[in-house]
Image (tube, rainbow, N blue to C red; front, side, top):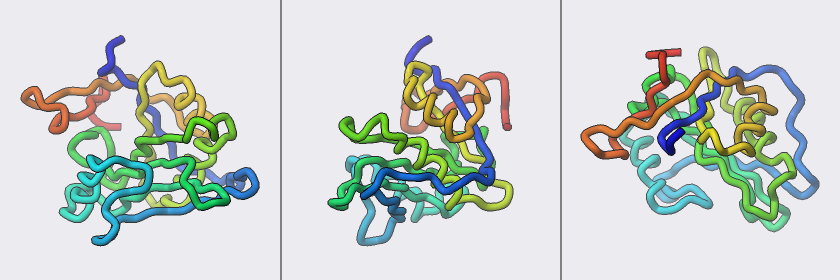
Length: 179
C-alpha cells in the first residue's frame, strides 16, 4: 500500500502494574506554557500543536508530551498526547491520540515505548476516553509496542488532503465514520 495508508489502533486503559523503567530512567510530563511552547525533542513545526492548544482548536485541554529521561536528565523517549481535532474525525471529543512517538536509537529495544504508552494511558485516563495510535503499516516496532501496551487493531486509515493541502487534511478510517 502507499505511504498514505495507515494502521489505526485504539485502547481503553485497564488496571495493570506501573510500568517499570530501567534503573536511572524516569517519566516526565511536559505541558505547554506561554514561556515553553516547544516540546523537548520536537522541531519548530510542532509549535502548531501548542497554538492549537491555546486557541482551543483541540476538543479537550489534555495536550501533553510524556518523556522518559535518563540519569543525566536527557530525553531518550517521547510520546505526544494529542486531543482529537478536525484531522482525526473518527475520534471522540474526549479522546487522545498518542502520536509522534520516538526513542533515541541507542535506547531502543529496552521497552521504553511500551512503558510510555502504558504510563500515558494511566496518567491521562478519564471517563469516556479512548486512546488512539496510528502508524504506517511498515513500522513493525511501533505496531509491536502498541500491541504490548494493550492497543487493538481497528482498521486501515488513509491520509486525505483538503484542496491539495496535507496540513488541512484528515485521516479517514476506511469503512467507518466514527468508532
